[in-house]
Length: 294
Image (cartoon, rainbow, N blue to C red; front, side, top):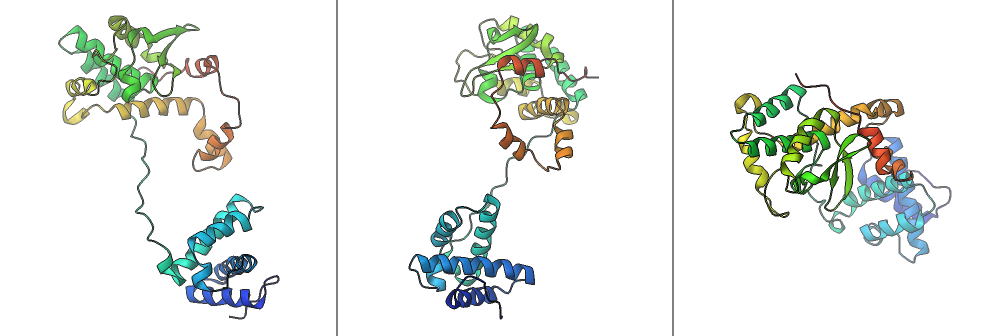
């Protein structure tokens, strides 16, 4: 390998050629990227008083220091690329200095939304429960999850008095770790209103203590729809709410127009915008609602 850098000395160039040759890069372009990163690492090491040896330079701590300090003025994407390239070299040339990568844990994916017909079937099962209390609580559970996107403690802790009217629209005041006002999708306003009136100052889904955990299990068990419908899943009801809102505000079209594969870049931009007021949220989401299920 006869590659020679423009700015690094012979010792740094020799280090880069040696370690990259040991990696056997798959293409000339890949080799050039690894050579550049390795020579810059060796140059950084020389300035820090480190010899240009694999044992001294190809350490995770030295690579991290170089990326954060030696490339402080480079863009984030450039620094990430250099870090990945140097770790690639280090894992092949000095593997004993790199601990095994942690076992990857799959990111939790969204549950599959229910169809309108499936939610209508669950509401019909709720309406067929043998007592008024069971009917109201089961209906309230479905409407809070599918109509306001609430699950877990947010759902369990909603009292009838937390369902309020703002600008003529039904909303839920959510307490807990993330207090907020959530507009209810229009189609769920009437059944949720009935459940909230029945509950009064009590919890919409039943129980008497705010920290109770198993109260929704019995309701869900009573709404089992057999093989055709399956067991009710609050996470799928929430996914149905999300799907309705995301579709109505045009997020899929925005991603397509921006050429984005996911919404991370959008969330980054949102962090620079002023936080919306409750009125803003209600005005946008409150009028939304899925068509009446068949």
